[in-house]
Length: 148
Image (cartoon, rainbow, N blue to C red; front, side, top):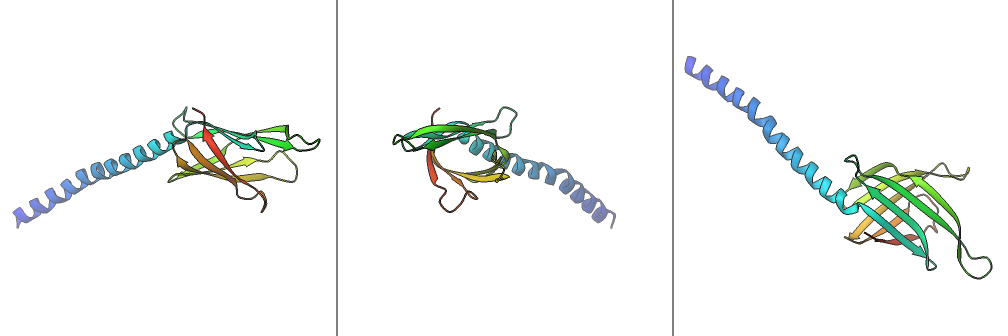
């Protein structure tokens, strides 16, 4: 009887000591994989509309988390030749990485729009698709290219 109690106690102690180590190893592997995916997004990305730079997305992991800025260039076609009429600079809010898709929100600069929700779907190491989810039915999906 005493031997059984000792065995049960040792088994419970073993599980209590080894299980957290195994779980830490799994969490650490998941964190490493997530960090590796995030690293693929780090850099400067640019997209064009009408032959002009329409969007510049800059992503970094300076403090270990993926953060960045988005510059939207308003293109005006008045006068025949398309030209950049306005630059809107935004800080990424609530960036979230799920697989190879980054989603984030930016605060709108126009009074009629409070926030804009974007996704960036990476299609290769140097290309991705940027889309505003709540900018209207005619919001284009912009092909963006990694510059560095």
